[in-house]
Amino acid sequence: MVANLDRSLPFYRAIGFTQDCSVASAWRKDELLDRLLGIKGAQSRTAKLTIDSNVSGKPFSRYCGN
Image (cartoon, rainbow, N blue to C red; front, side):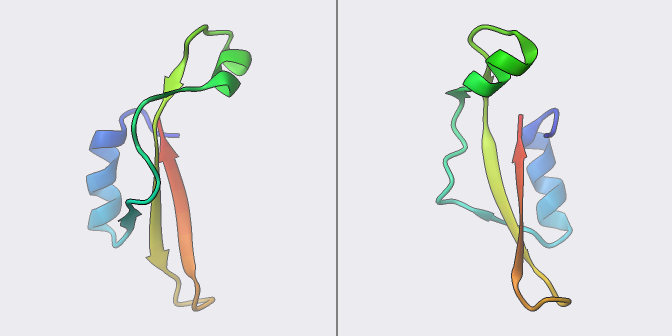
């Protein structure tokens, strides 16, 4: 989880990650955060980032959200 998704994405791109645009990054209601934090109407956004792994030869994905 990141504090600011818009500011975090350029950092991950700069170190070689690419964003998977098939994952919607629009704000949405987050019922899990409602329960965990006790905040009614909590919203979050998510971005999926991928980088090639030279260890396994398979892409490594990381989800970022705020």
